[in-house]
Image (cartoon, rainbow over the protein chains, first blue to last red):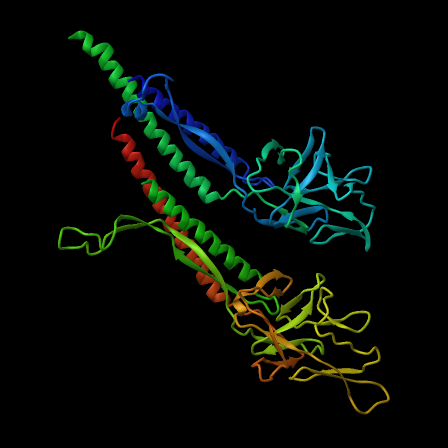
Length: 244
Length: 263
């Protein structure tokens, strides 16, 4: 009886966590450069003692479904044309590399500014890395080509670098649209730069809404299972049987 | 029921893409030389609950089987190669192609781009270039003292200069066509690039033996977007999206009924 109760409870907790992921995705449906996160469920075999042989029934009833992982969806978000010369979007694979207080971070959010030193920085003030470190933008009409060549009033002023990672490299979200990657895993990127556009969030409203409906109904079913164990079985065992 | 939910979701996503395509077509309804795209949908895979042709008994087979589809997917967006309408501008550097073929332009990366938009300008050295500054390939240079520029239907460019009665030929515009123009890669700026799907370009003189179209000077080819057809596609996309969302609602309500069974 207990394993059924805990199985239902584990499932409900997993669905609640998945619901939090879904809510986070929906909250970021307008965030520039946001990558949707999808939950992956996995089964966890509980109560495995090392020396006893496990019979099939024990394995079946102690097989809990928990939230195993959250995958980052790498699909391209839609490009929104803003017309600002300091807005950049990457079409294809690649990340902007920025130097922040906590090390080297990567982002798809190309909403850049020029700070008081003339360096190209992100909205939080982190310096954007070019081919040779920080990029200094002199005053004038800024024009950046598809491969990152920066020219101001027709004169070359530097190279905006995009980096990529080997497929399967673990990119962990670090907040503020930044991602963290293992050191030394940068490689050349094949994406193209688009000046004057920003990459929107890649959250698909339809799949997010339908996922929400499925999760809700799933959680409801588990809640019914939990109620069956708690209210019916336990009540019958504890109260009704004792009156016989 | 969850299967119905996800199947309906694929339908809604497909119609979203359909609307995106309609929006692109409509926004380019006045772009010179634009070719509209049409999405092609395919059904997704099927879940075989009972395989058709499976043995029912020793001597009989199942007649039709039990297969449940899992939704739809967008397979391709084909470019409709219909000729656009002609707009007479009277500008001597405006060209329209009547028939098949593309102008060849040299892109900044060195590769050859192909375009139907015939709005050409002269750069500071007299070369015929597009609005982005990409020169025609092979290049045509107009001398600075040219009085009038005439471009014949076979691509021959002749100019008249002061003090000369005879017109001077300064070059020949060549066109290119492809075995499969639908396989060209659209890169924006009215330019297409060749791919392995489109095949190698077949170049030649306009109106020549390769079947290329003829040139018309002073005329621009408009976009071939048919606004009425796009509006109908938009209505279809909207109603199909609505129908799929009704399926989501129905599945949701059925799941609610299921949950209420044990209350």
